[in-house]
Image (tube, rainbow, N blue to C red; front, side):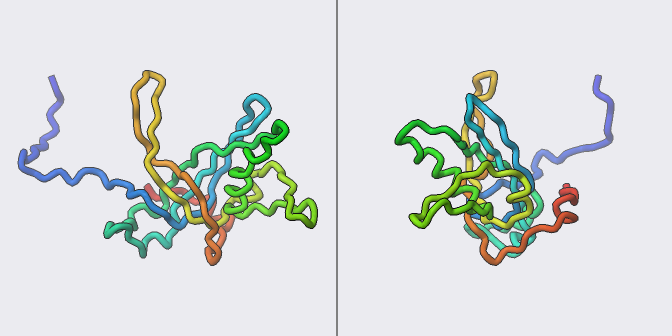
Length: 174
């Protein structure tokens, strides 16, 4: 038998539900970088925290101030340090992603070629970006299709201010 709580709920109470993340582009800061090696290649997952500037925004008429401080993770970005002949293009997304995160890659020559280094957390941590959030479908271990919100792209936030070490270490308020 259930333990009584003394709570009664009116069956006609409207369900406000949880607030839903609206896909869009949000001001954010890089808060974490995870790297995993797999078959000689590396996958990088970037975490972002929605910036305080989101308090003043709305997307498609929806107030998104409640998202300030929430964190989201990117889908993986791959780096293949030894691409096969003619497959160098496979690292272009990696280079673009982390350039947009504020990583400073070195020019290799005057032809515009770039030395592609392996990004570390210190290269991007706290940097401001615009993060594109969207819905992503995946299948869990039980074979059930699910949906989650993930960072699908990052864009440079030219006039955004980097987070200080204190701001990076602060707890999210929820």
